[in-house]
Structures are given as structure tokens and as C-alpha cells.
Image 1: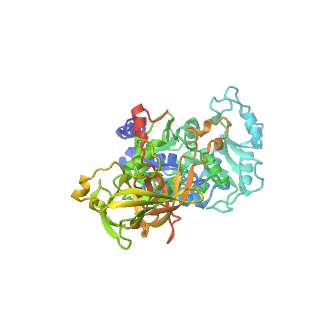
Image 2 (image 1 turned 180 degrees about the vertical axis):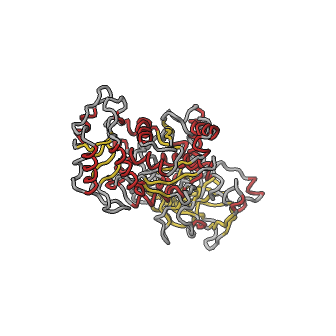
Image 3 (image 1 turned 135 degrees about the vertical axis):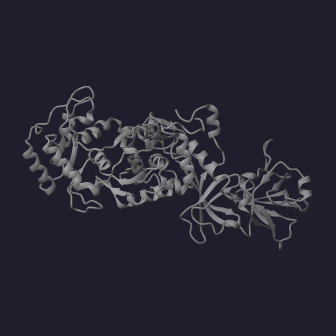
Length: 564
């Protein structure tokens, strides 16, 4: 995929509408989530598109909750959705709406359809309705209740609203065409009985409109011009149009569909995400392994990186699979100059510098980010006992190992050159527990003498007496397969990566990070970009690795494609 901005066919539609004066020169979009789960990166694409188009063309964008199914909805989801939209950088101003705001108007529209002979009350069970519906190759059969009179339908529908019938006993259906090649036009259900309290209307209603009925009419009530949906709603557009045209609503909105986002190494179905949460495969909707916006935020993704990702993938007419490496690349690109670069030892190995005075502490000036001097500098304490990364030492190293080994020298970043003299091992297990080294006092970083001494390896480190303990959570992809839907067993959970989370509890960080607040971003030298987790408490720092330093997106670009 090219890094250039993709052509947006919806922009072309809007520009043509503005040119011809359609909608009176207005552009009014909406983002209409159902409050039955947390938003994910696919919704972020829709948010950026709908709010972005309104900003680009001087229009408006509403946030509307399509809250028509109270059995699956919760105020928790309403709150989380508002938080996510605002976090991404968008505002709906005073245009926060709910489909439940329109329940009375929607009921009146349903009554109007009944009076027109375009809707009827049906007593078939849900299973019978499916059987009567037919297939893609066979037409459906008309319900035996399709011929009810207008008066009988009006009476039954009013009694449905009054609560006389139990759940599932009756539904209101549109009277369209049971032989239509589009199954969505074979007398679709418009209302169902559901004796469930609604999070906003309480027990006022016991009948609720179906999404396909409420959606186009809510658009019309709000004066939406361009109703932009993902591609799975393409087959629903004829019903969208039928409802608006049959009811004679003018001016009316028009629906346009774009490709939904599919991302490798994850699932994008809200139903599947809910299953991962409820079955305990992850720690909640904001687990950093999930593609939810809350999870991405907790992992350390920034609004700018997500908006950039949505810009790069563009708006297409056909579905495709986007490599998650592009999303990771966007985060690295955003944080590279913004994040302070610190030293953190994740798997500590003790080093005693024997010829360094035991009571001495030096403070070494070090820049936070050499590519961004504006971030300033800090003072690093250096002392006789330090810790290095355990992987930075090998007792019997291979030929191209340029880190520390017996008799070898390395440079400690911002400090001195040290040489390993002895290895101390646990007498029982044989495990290496300590290194004894010496340092060259003439090699302090930044001095002419230091520049004259060349060694191949440079290691990060922390002073033992000043190190800040921390828990560090290392995240990998949640699934082992690029497309978890293609697992041989047919159950996507079979592809869950058992090593998607590794928790390191005894990490040591340089002291400048001691007062880090949740949400702060850092680059740990040689380890990647990290974010302070909300679990952080006084005396207990917790970090999530947002992304490693290795950028595999460059290799994918060389291969000439972003998706498949």
C-alpha cells in the first residue's frame, strides 16, 4: 500500500451533491453505534470518516445511539462510546441523540404504514418466519396473517404496545414482496415484543423497533444527508429506501456503503469480542490485546496514530484484510519524536564495579531524545553497583555477540567503558547471579578520551541504589493465525496465542520515571515503546509495552501490499 492518502469515493459523491445542490448544499452525517459493547478500531475508521467529512465540508455530524434492543444494551457502553469518540479528537457539540428519543414518532410511522396497507401484525413464531422466508434460490411464502384488515392490525398493534401479549407472540411486519430476490424485502419484521426495561425509557415500552426500521427514520428525523454505513448493510439499502419512499419523507437521506476494516491477528466482530471478555480469555473490554479503542488506549496507542492509520487505509468499496503491522507502524511514527527515551532493565543481572568507590555517586547528564532536543535532559545517577539486562551477558558467546562476556569490554550508555573480570554463580544451581567488573575512569561519555576509545557494544543499565521497581507487561498478538476465522476447528478461540501476555514483576527503571502518571508514554531503550498502565499506584509502577522497536511494516511495503 502506498503511504499516500487513498482516494475517497464518498468524497466524490458529496462533492457532486454540493455541485448539483442536492440536500440544499448541506452535509450532515452521523455516527450511530448500538450501545451493546465497546467500540473497536473498525468503529474508529467510521468515526474518522463521518466526523472528518463533516469537518472537511463545513457540515455537521451527530452522535446517535441506536438503542432499540434493551436486552443487550447498557449505560456502561453508552459512557464508553462517548469517551472513545472524544478521545479520538471529535466533538458532536449539542448533537447527542438516541433512537429512543424517537420511539413515539417511530410508532406513529408504523401506524401510518398499517393504515396504508403496508404493514401487518403476524402471529408466526420466529422459527416459522424463517421457514416462510424462503432461500436465495426459492421465493418465500406469504404469512397466513398477511391478509388481516387495517382495522384488525391497528387493534392488535395497539394491544401489543399495551403489553397484552408475551414476548415472541406477535410481530409487526412490512408488507413488501415475499418473492423478492432480496431477502430483506420479504416482509421484514419492523417491531417485536420485548418486556425488558430500557436504560433510558424504563418500562414505558414493551415493543421495540428493529434496527432496519429505526435507522433510516432516525436519519430522516435528524436531517441527515449522507448515511454512511459499512458494506454489510448494502443488501439492507433497498429496505432503507422503501421505508422512506413509502412514507413519502422529503427531504430524505441516502445511504452509502464502504468497506469495513478487517485486521490481521484479531477479530472485529462485537459478538466475538464479547465472548472473549465473558469467557475470560482477556481481562476485560479494555484489555490491551483487544482491538477495542479502550484496549488500544490502555496499551498506549495515541489518537493521532489511530487517525493516521485510518487515513492510510483509505475508504474503499471492497472488503480487504489490513496487516496489523501498519497500525503498529503508525504508533512508532507518532511516538518516535514525542516519547522520552529511558533506560529500563526488564530482566536484571547484578554488576559490581570493583574499582569504583563504594560511597561515590555521579550524576551524568543525558538527553531524553537525541532526535528531539526540546524534550530536555535529566541527571542519571551512577554508582558502584548497577544492573544490566541478563540477555546482555553470555559466558561463552558466539562469534558475533558484541555485548558483555568474560574478559570483554562494553560501553555503558551515557557512562563508562567496563570490563568483565569474574562471574559469580549460585553454588547450588549454577545460575549466574552477579558479574564483577572494572571501569576505565577516562572513558566517561562526552569526553575526548571517551571518544577515542572504541568498543562494539553499548548497554543500557540502572544504578542499583536508585532504581525504581516496576511491573512490565509484554503483549504479543492475541491470535497465532493471521485470520483467526480460518482455524481448522471452526472456533476462532482455538487460535488464541497462549503467550500473548508475559508479566515481568522485578523490572528496574531509571529514577526519572518515578512520578510517571498513567497514560504517559516512553521509549525503553532497545525494548520498545511503553505506556504507564492505570493499575499504577503510589509505590507500584505498571507499564504496558505498546509496540516493539522492530518495524515489520517496512518489509511489507517492500513486498508491495498492505492487505490480501
